[in-house]
Length: 232
Ligand code: TIU
Image 1 (cartoon, rainbow, N blue to C red):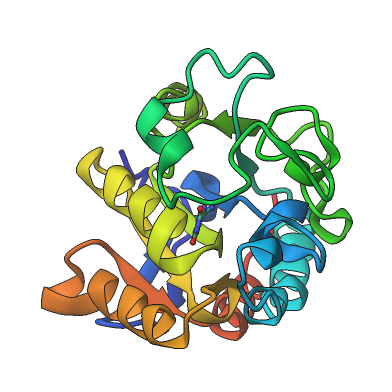
Image 2: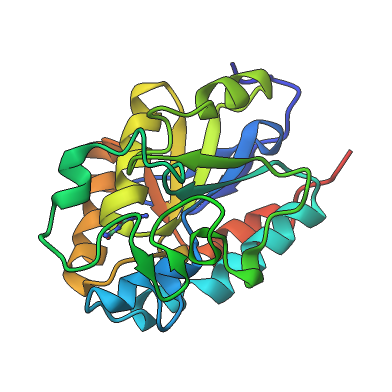
């Protein structure tokens, strides 16, 4: 799919250099939603330390600003369900045996329900009207969504995947993308987990075995490479 006329930017990454083709590379920001990141939200209510995720906000903000400034493509995802919960699998609703479940009233509206305040994206990374927002019912961004069609229609072959959480929605999405033929680059400072050991191993799993699912880098290295990109 790569067009030979396109500029290739070399990004330092593991397990080896990533050849970033700006015209074919979208920034895909996973589930940076208020319920996962804000104090008093669903994530914290489950007993999680949201500061582990909040450290990703500033690097994501810088990367997003650079991506927009260069006129490159950005997409966002949100995990959540229809207000009538008609497509919510029973298994997902009851898993964890929590007192509060998906669809119940939570600190910022009904938990993981589309249209509720907690379901929306944090203000620091709020999507612009030109940036598609993919509402996904699962952990992976491809399952039961139109993401694949949008990427194909826009000539995207590479994804820089950021967001939360590293081992759940980011990893699932990277694996789904890999099986569909996309090259994925994950900046480690732009993804977060509530659990430090899962953060580390979630990234190891992507880059092991010669980059079995993709590449791991740092936003600073992507920004450095992007600085050399001449917009048309
Ligand atoms: N977006 C995402 O990762 N959803 C989760 O439920 N993650 C957890 O780590 N629980």
